[in-house]
Amino acid sequence: MTDRISITEYLDSIAALAPAHRERAGEAEQERRLSQQTVDELVAAGLFRVYQSARFGGPELSMAEVIPLITQVGRACPATAWVLAIMQMHIWMIGVYPQQAQDEVFEDDSNTLVCGVLQPRAMAKRVAGGYELGETTWPYASGCDFARWATVGGLVQRDGGPPEMRVFLLPRDEYDIVDDWQVTGLRGTGSKSLAGGGTFVPEHRTISFMDAIAGELGKDRSPLFKSSVLGLLYLNLTGPALGAAQTAVEVFIGHIENRNLPFSIHKQVDAAQAHRLLGEAMLQTGSAELMMERGAAMVREKAEAGEQLPVVERNRVRVYSSGAVRQCVAAIESLFLASGGTAIQETHPLQQLNRDAKAMALHAALAHENNLELWGASRLGKPLNSEFV
Image 1 (cartoon, rainbow, N blue to C red):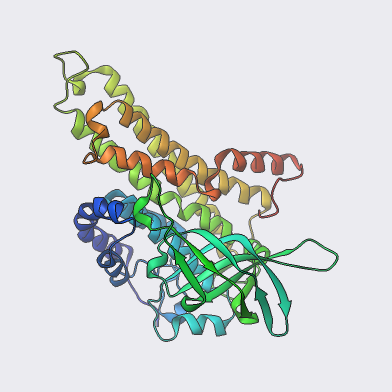
Image 2 (image 1 turned 135 degrees about the vertical axis):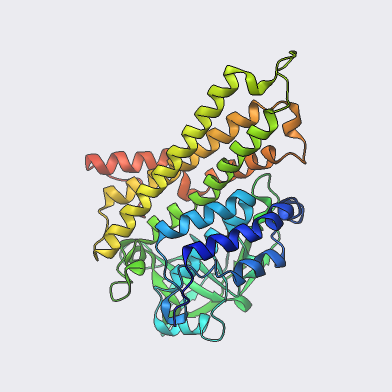
């Protein structure tokens, strides 16, 4: 039975949790992970399950509905929103696995959390009934401390051809968590490495990544699972950045209210340069939101029509995603630089928002220059620099 939670109810839950999440943002940064309490609250609110199959009680929301929810979480704590967005995607991915794998993950507990790293770091070999997955380390598994399963990428050796990229589903007892998350941005996400492999993975716990990209795995399922995994991944990651930028605007407005201009008796809030700066930041933030909305609408429309986005349009979604994040980073950076020395104090939110947003822009899915190249090349019909489009 599907949980019937309205978008308004989700937003009300997020608003109720926001003060505590904002209060814990500094603690998460110090501890380099979210608190168990924060994760439990998100679980209770149903926010990890938004993309979960209706078969296990999930609401199967569209990305157009989910991104504003992530954004609102990000306004209070970008690290919390990042973990939420990443783990939502891996829960969505379980929905395109064979039913046996889905049952193993969710049948006993529909609130089971899943982390993962899609980079094909391991080498694998096909054997009777499945695959032998080689040992390796997968970096940047956001939220891994709270997951009972992980999806990880690997390359399968093939005779007479390039290796095949597959995604393997591992239970918690088949990988270790390496505490190597020593970073300057998004510290609170606990994005540590997973170390594992050297194990047998049965056939039902693996999928072709290329089929997931093409939307082939969800053909006989609801529209949500007919989407390309990449479009969902890119766009889901934009919400935390937008939330951070929206908060930065509000923080800046409060910050300049009683601040003098450098070496001046005049208030910054009365200065034309501050007005222009604020206007530009709001324009950048609004532009990011529009790109996100358009990208989500493109994915939703095609999925509901039972069609796949052409490659050139998939690359447009990539650019909308990374472009939106770049706009958010630029807005936060400009506000931070105009806030004076006070803004570098550890207690000031602008310095953490600035570091967190820049860390988001470094995610491989949000590599803007690369995404621009892919979009331009596909529009011209030229060879692409990536097979994963």
